[in-house]
Image (cartoon, rainbow, N blue to C red; front, side, top):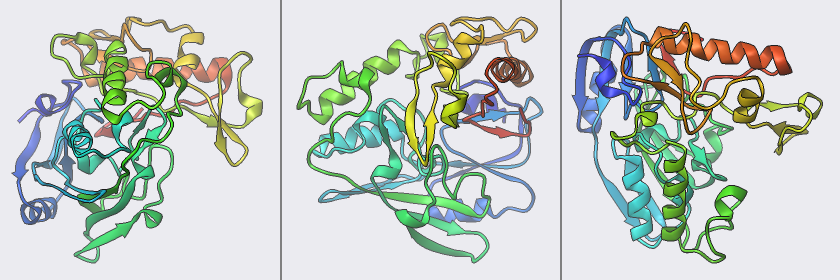
Length: 323
């Protein structure tokens, strides 16, 4: 079973064994297999080595959405964009800016998925997860999840297996905090109108999965926006308050001003390139490899560091390889 067939990048070698879990019990049992285990959701945030994975890959396929008032509980295996759509159909707000993000619901608390001024930490009430150390299922309230920019206590921790997530939403959307999106929607826009604007914006950047668009054969943003001391902000670079005396600098700006344009070819990294629509996305043209992708990523990272003294960090999870 080649993992390339289960990742949005279309890259990754074979798994030693592959199990599809459709219930919590199946998921817990499969994830407890001896040896290395990789829990696989939608594959939208994974970069898997060309050599594959020398253990058990557990494909999460659990289902279920329950709405009670403003609270929405979602099984880990539900498609994230369908979750957002269902919340809007139920007349709820709080997830609309996260429309069009590929992957499964169970992955969203792991990396605190966010876009256009929203992140799931804003609305997550609890995360129900299996603890491999205690062998118990526990409800973790938001305050214990250690949410931060694109991370949480669940990221990189083999100890926890997310089973479902409960969101506490609202009847009316909050003001849009992202200027590029705010310019596209009228004041007082409904969650549905905001969703359509977000989808249009993401399509323009190749960030909505579309088999007809080769720019979507990626894992979305490859680098996170660095959070740095104000003294490190390059002259002319946009930056935003990140709290604690730090600021966030757009990685896309740094990449472009370090000499990498949209559509940039990998050169010695055949079969991969920067997206023609967005410099944060690295694309597999169909004949690429994980090794080539990481060669291009290192070239970008090293150039930004040499130019600005700022280190770019990968947003996707790297399996069997490193940057």
